[in-house]
Length: 271
Ligand code: GDP
Ligand code: K
Ligand code: MG
Image 1: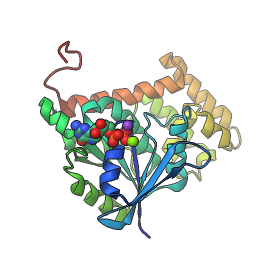
Image 2: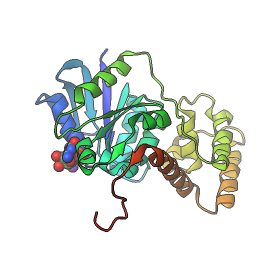
Image 3: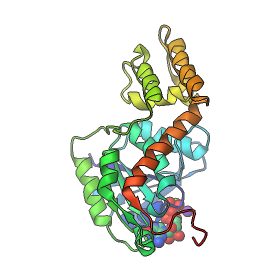
């Protein structure tokens, strides 16, 4: 049996630091099949039933970079029990961009708000339960560098891994026009047997080349979907991929505005 945990996060979010703490020296280092991106997998030293895979550092799940494709293929094909999303809390807006995408994969997510020592030192305040409420997943403050909060984090990861939970609800929503198009796509018969409908519908909306390439459209679905996309592109005067990017950032901005209090604004010249 065992619990499979995938470590996912931006480059420099602290993945390697926590990976080394979690696995100690008993780690496997290899390469991802067919690529030169380093692959690391090992057992949690406090509970050998827990397998941890360190995915390549990524900013997005787009189909453009090798790291993104490797991470995305792993998450979709291997379907780990839990995604442990490392978030650099001192750069929270940028890091949560990936989080919004990980939450759509229909795999339970636990967010580790790492570098909380940096946040505390600045005097900034993050309301963890606000983020939990907005994203519908557990959020645990940690410092991988100072080795704080990690037992707490792993208790949460293991408890989800041991539970029957095998799905992740997406509770944040984009603007109405975009949601309408996503819903149209989700309800196409081509998606009737797809398990992560929302993620697939969003990727089709973005005209993601990797998803479109492997997707089998039935009946008139290809045209129905294209019409739904073009309608939104016309009304929002932008291409569909940029529309989704902007929607993600406005979801994040709204969460941050209630959940994060900064002593100094990002625009402060003394920063
Ligand atoms: P990765 O690219 O995600 O694997 O990130 P690393 O584990 O290599 O960490 C990037 C940098 O951040 C390193 O210099 C770490 O020492 C530092 N770092 C990691 N976690 C923390 C933390 O909790 N607090 C602080 N202050 N620095 C951290
Ligand atoms: K690094
Ligand atoms: Mg690393």
